[in-house]
Image (cartoon, rainbow, N blue to C red; front, side):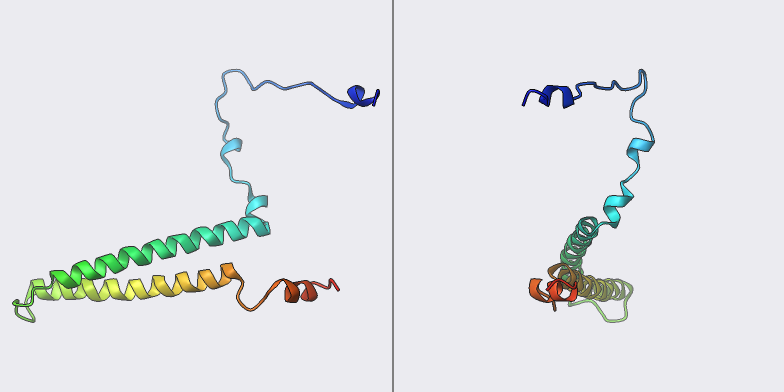
Amino acid sequence: MAEFPSKVSTRTSSPAQGAGASVSALRPDLGFVRSRLGALMLLQLLMIFNISATVLYVTAFIACSAAVDLTSLRGTRPYNQRAAASFFASLVMIAYGVSAFFSYQAWRGVGSNAATSQMAGGHA
């Protein structure tokens, strides 16, 4: 226990004078992004983005569909614009919904569990 204080270094460094945040400090840590934890975090962010985009396009679809006036004549310009907007919103809503579903499946790790992934990794 007596030799413990001699192993501890208490030197500190001071930041450069007059320099704010350097450009190198603002670069992302690519090592973290390439790690498993970083990849899972990015996947989760993509999943949250896809789910929120799906909810927004559901809202757009409902709003555009409700805005189509039932008394307007088919083939008129306002009717066609609202119908096209509703159709586009439904297509994008389905695409984001499917993408969110697959992101969730990948995040959850469907098709594998701890036992099968341990066996596949060579750990007996």
